[in-house]
Length: 316
Image (cartoon, rainbow, N blue to C red; front, top):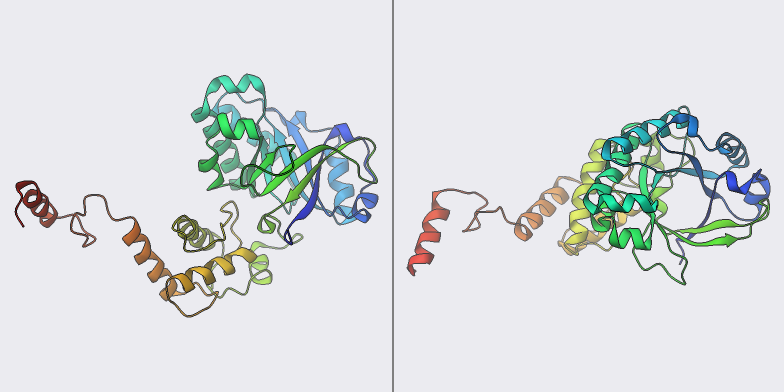
């Protein structure tokens, strides 16, 4: 696929990495372990070195935090520890919550999913994009995959010939060989380029540089547009599924708007103007009517009760 991007992920287990050789070998993206557990003192002992040297080599970075959390509150403490480690750092990819400890499975899908959401939301509020990492078994049996995927980037570990779940990043091997790294390293493919931002630019500049959109909005407003585009994707109005875990437009947003406009019969454009928002809102209303609005006028009132009574009485 044209949009595939090669990526490695590393931790203390890869030792001292020669990041210049890694970059020359064609690996321009990496996710480095920041640490684990609930204390900032549990920083990965190669994190600072990896961060500094990878940055110097021009490698775009994300990070991950290995979880031992046993509750939602504990997940929040892990997020706080992670943010303390990341203080003053800049990343181009999300911070992923690594969930795979076998003892955690006893807490059940609902609690584990809420733990993931609590961590990711705290990281996002701390100024970083956030996502969830786990394996096929966990995403299938212990996490509400669809719920998480609607909000956060997903990093799937599955050592197979292809990923069996839709994901933003697929970790397909743990036995890769890359120049500059002794021993084996995890290999990944980034399927969604929108989760990678430009180097150390303010979000509004990223928005301008990566998109021709003319919505005249940024930050929270972009997140709002992404929200309705996520609904539009569920309605089959567009094929592009937005990543909600950031607040810059990204290249995919223009395509999604263009596809929606075509599906709704609007002039072809990548502009999210008043006409577009109004048309999409109307389409959403028609697809998902107000509960209790029996006659479809967009309101719940006495006329709905009268129509229901007539139906029950068999009166035309």
